[in-house]
Image: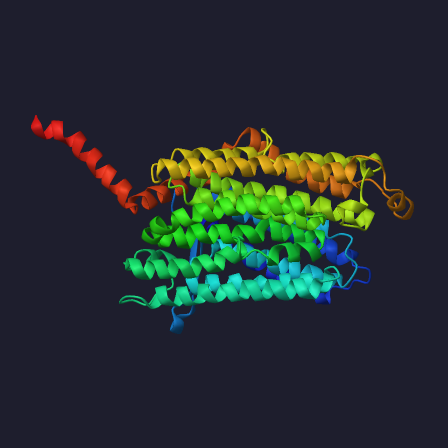
Amino acid sequence: MNIANFPWLTTIILFPIAASLLLPIIPDKDGKTVRWYSLIIGLIDFALIVYAFYTGYDFSNPDLQLVESYPWVPQLGLNWSVGADGLSMPLILLTGFITTLAVLAAWPITLKPKLFYFLILAMYGGQIAVFAVQDMLLFFLVWELELVPIYFLLSIWGGKKRQYAATKFILYTAGGSLFILLSALTMGFYGDTVTFDMRAIALKDFGLNLQLLLYAGFLIAYAVKLPIIPLHTWLPDAHGEATAPVHMLLAGILLKMGGYALIRMNAEMLPDAHAYIAPALVVLGVVNIIYAALTSFAQRNLKRKIAYSSISHMGFVLIGIASFTDLGLSGAMLQMVSHGLIGASLFFLVGATYDRTHTLMLDEMGGVGKKMRKIFAMFTTCSMASLALPGMSGFVAELMVFVGFATSDAYNPTFKVIIIFLMAVGVILTPIYLLSMLREIFYGQENEELVSHQALIDAEPREVFIIACLLIPIIGIGFYPKLLTQMYDATTVQLTAKLRDSVPTLTAAKAVETVSLTAPIMGH
């Protein structure tokens, strides 16, 4: 077989799912065998992802690559169709990286280890599929597929209110998914040909009113996942009850599915509607940034504080998507990857701190930095990344969104000034709540009751290794953003040009500019 024609993406998606089916028959009494098996499967799949993109992906090509298409249910026009471009390729890499580290983070799990790792590996394939599939019905199916593992991971291994958090998660996300199905069926059956292929659907000529309706349907579904206020309340509850590896998957990958789908379907497939609704996305983004930052400041529960911080940071993604500039959209992509890495690191450290202190309440902590120096150093470094310290990936991403929106010619100057001012307020609030959090956990007098009842052991090598793996790309991207931006620039530049063509004021300005340039030639 010619290696260039090898079905890389199909293999990458199905390999961890197939491997998970063998877990029940692996002889294992104490969980050690299954965790090593799961880690090896995760590493192999991540190696396959890296190899496939290294050998078969061209950064300068903005179109779909590694494309595969096989008839699946021909009677319904349903095909197994997968491919990767600049929008999906970085997020597939992120999924492989974070999920493999999440398997390593799950090392202390002793309750039903076979079921736990089965769900993690099944999610591995399902989440990659979300970013790779190019068929609308198939997209809906894989979008639903990852809901079930998360539900069980929350309801079995979660905290005291795990059943409530898991039920709320499934109700919100499954309810939102109905809008994906309705919109996908409408788009597929519209016109003379019935097709669910995303590229074919993008070429259909939907009327503006229908585009606006479809856009609203998709927006509701993806607003739940991103999440956008006021459809965000499932996230603090889910994070409040989850274990460290599930935190990493929620913050690192699940939220990015909402941002990716907003770009892929709302912006790319419905550009005329995007031109009308983009200002609302900007306003929602600012609300996310400020409201979630203020709410995070008020939280006394450590997990909920970081959860609201995640919601705040995802507001920059919304503004970047709605900026109509190459820099803004590039910043949104960078922010998704950056937050995936930073969010996963912070939540892993929250889990590590809880394992030692057995409390999440900031009032019950204090002075633990004296005994847990490595955790103190790692928590501080990751918090600096989250508050967008220069030299870290978060700074570059937020700066790109800032400058991209500030230089956008699609908006009224007054509107831009107001939004930029509010974004700046959000950026100022972030270090306030993160630094106060560090002070309450690690500084000050030790809580005598906590110290006397809990063994505050410092970080073990496994935990240091996980954080080191996450900090290397965070700092690497911070100092040399081109490491990441070159992967998707060709695609985002092409998409921005398409979006700008759908904005009436920009199209008119472009026409005037063209006339003024050709007039001297015609006169001559």
